[in-house]
Length: 488
Image (cartoon, rainbow, N blue to C red):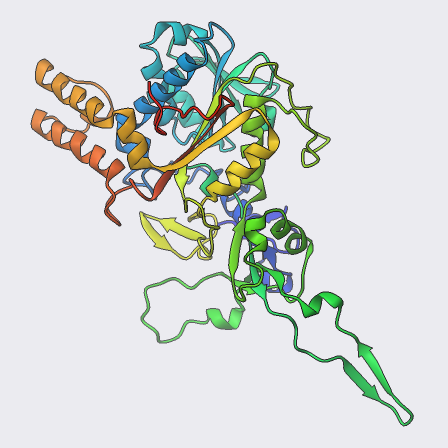
C-alpha cells in the first residue's frame, strides 16, 4: 500500500514508515490520484505485486481490447480509412498510443493494418506512452517477443514482430518527437479516466457579520469580510486522513473496509479554485447553483491540446503551453488523427464521479491507496474545447456512443467473418476470441457474446452506451470521419 504524504504532494513515504497522516494538511484529489496510481514506490500502475495483473478476469477490470480482437481490428480499420482519406501518404506515418495497457490494442491494430501493405510500408515509428515498468515489459513481450530491449535518450526501444517496425516507449508524450512533416495517428483508450482531477463545490455568499471588539470608548472591527464573500464561490474538495479515533474497530459487522481518507471542503478559496473554474463558460454557468460540484482535469486538457497541435500544428499563440517545452510545430498541411475512447457524459460536466475498482467491483476510492484502481468520468466537451483552442486546423467529431461507432465500423460483419473462418477451418481459427476454448460452437458463442458486450445498451450489461468515442482530425470543411457518420 502506498502511504500518502499530504504535507508534500510530490513525496511518497515507502510502506512501513511511520504513518503521520493526521499531522499534515489536506491535498487535492489530483495529488491523491497521482500518488495512488503512479507513485514510484507503491503506485497502482507502477508497482509489480508478485506478478499480479491489473487486467483481465483475474485482475481488477476488463477493457474492450481484452474482450474481443474485433475491437482493435476495427480501430486499425479506422486508421486505414483516415490514411486513405488524407491522400495515402507513402512515408512519415507514426502510430502513438497513450496508456497501452498490456499492449493488446496495439497488437490488434498492427495485425489489422499489416493486411494493407501500402499503409504498413508508410509507417516509420510506433510510440507507446507508458509510465509503468511492469506494463512496459508486458507490452514488449507481446509486441516484440525476444527482440532486444535497449535504452535510448527518450526511453526504451525494441523491434516489433510486425514488419520489423521500431517501437519506442516514453514516459510522457512530451518526450515523443514532434515534427511537422510527420503524420501521427494517436489512440487513447481508457486513458483519460485515470488522469488526475480537481473537484470544486459552489458555496453561497457568506452570511457572517464582521466581528467587533467592544472597548470602553468604541467598537473596533476585527475583520471585515472580503468583497468576494458577498458572491458565490468555488471551494475545492480536498482529501485528508480519517482521524485515528474513527478507525477504531467497533462491534459493527460491516464487511466494508474502513476508509483511510475522506473528502473535506476547503475553508477558503485557493489558487486552483480561483483559476480552474474560470476557464470555461460551462463552469461559470454552474457557480450560482448552490452546492453544485464540478470536476476538472487540467492534465486531460493538456493531452487533448497536445494531440491537436501534433495533428494541426500550432497556428496561434498559446500562453498555456509551458516555455520549458519545445515549440509546437508549424505544419503547412495538417495530417494525422486522434481517437479517444473512454467513459463519461456526452456534454455535461462530470460531478462526484471518482471511484475505486477492485476485483471487478466498485469500492471506496479512499480505501487501500495504491491497491485500488482509481478513475473518474471524462469530460468530452472539455477535451474538445482544449483541442480546438490549441490548433485552428483541426476539427472535433463526437462524442458518439461506442455502440454507434462500432456498428458503423462493421463490427457485425467482422464477427461473422471470424465465425465463417471457424466453419471453414473446422475450428482452427486464430485471434484472441478463438483461443479461449476448444469447441467450434463454443468459440462462436464467445465471439457473439464478446460483440454483444461491446455494443449492448442495457445498463450494467454492456459498454455500448457507457463508453463514448471522440475524434480529432484535420480541418476539412466538416466532412465526418468514418464511424461518426462518414463514408469509407
